[in-house]
Amino acid sequence: MIVITKHNAPEERIAEIVHQIEKAGVQAHVSRGTDRTVIGIIGKAEPSLAEHLRSMKDVENVIKISKSYKLASRDFHPDDTVIEIKGVKIGGEHLAIMGGPCAVETPEQIDEIARLVKAAGGQVLRGGAFKPRTGPYSFQGVGVEGLKMMADAGRKHGLLTITEVMTPEYVDICAEYADILQVGTRNMQNFDLLRKLGTIQTPVLLKRGFSATYDEFLNAAEYILAGGNPNVMLCERGIRTFETYTRNTLDLAAIPVLQSLSHLPVISDPSHGTGRRELVEPMAKASVAAGANGLIIEMHTDPDNSMTGDGVQSLFPDQFANLLKQLEQLGNLVGKRFDTPKEPAEFFNTWKI
Image 1 (cartoon, rainbow, N blue to C red):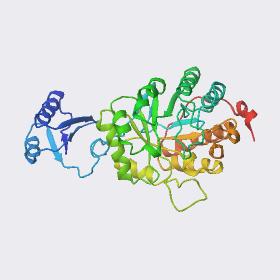
Image 2: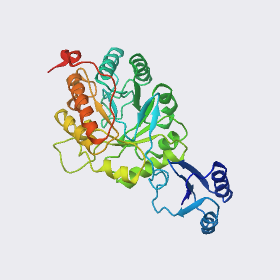
Image 3: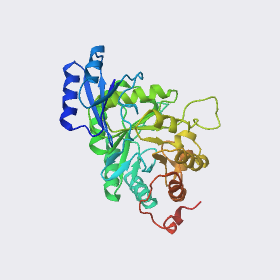
Image 4: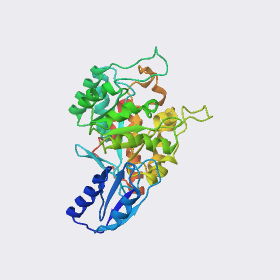
């Protein structure tokens, strides 16, 4: 259930409504909108509670939510969630760009890429220190040392950092070094990991499982929200279909659908969504046109020799910079703000192919 208060209900009345909810043995989650407050009720409440709340002063309505996810639902939180991290806003009208390699390889590699991401206008440096790979003999990442390398590069160049966390045991150490923690497609329903992420306040980028429905995806986000961490972003990264030409099938419809169902920011991953360098640009543009709140894009200075073997989907630095310039223009057309400082085109001449 959700309790909708009347316009500009005073804080003392909201506190009394919360008190009555908790007195009934269930949890209350308060969401303050622009002109009203919505109080979500989590747990199994007696039917009489709804009637009691309806009779209270400053309660406009009590509505039963049939969705299995409550806190992730737009019914509970009508306004878009905007997550602010060190001055960078993700969600709403803001367009966030996350760029970098699939994996951190050396200090020199991640420092140079961070410099180029910043020069192109990106706000977040991406890079994996722990890599979940399909085969056990593939490169698995450089571990904690990679976290330190990326943190150093991010600080030096004024970028936020995002890295993948794979197990509950590594959540705290990853959160110590990274500004955003990523949950990969294979771990979307790793419920122990999701519960642990709910106990911290570090923002989480949750990637959709490659066979997950929208309902399953939002319920995975609910685990983190229910644990007490409100800073969750959803990421469409492509699903598995019968088509083999692309690595995955990027589900563009997921962007507006998820935004209609949920208030959480929606990020698109055209790199994993296609697996082909030449398709990243058009699908990135399509994602922004569909309303995405951000993009996470692989970029490498030597993608053909990357240690992960994912170079076929990584952009060269000049391609990344040119794409961001076009996205700025596109953003203006669809109501997205992307106005970070950028270097002139000549800065990237070295990387022209």
